[in-house]
Image (tube, rainbow, N blue to C red; front, side, top):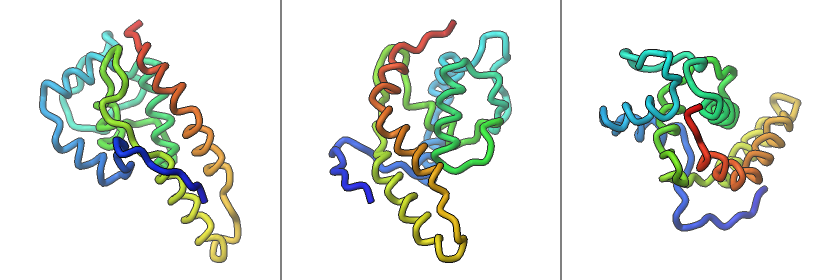
Length: 151
């Protein structure tokens, strides 16, 4: 189990928390997300999510793929409410407005995998390794987001 002391500034990462964040998004914030992450050639979506991931810039698709894997989605083809809420924490040229506690989330997922081992009879270690890789790369990832461009 990961023994990591969370920073007091970190927010727990959960699907419920992201859904709650999504319900609090106002129209100006949604427009800002579209302007930041969606290709100009694509029209601003008028319906509610899911959105097809191909309408997002490369950096946006990288975030979508990362978060989809961490949350256990089997595909990153569509952008659902929780992923859209996660995109809302980023602003151009600034670090993320919210820092999530990935370490606790990964520790919980690892524990879940171990507790299911007797019934599933297989430890899906690739997900755990991927989660750990993303966690230890998160500083570099946040730096790359700061350099987000619209090209």
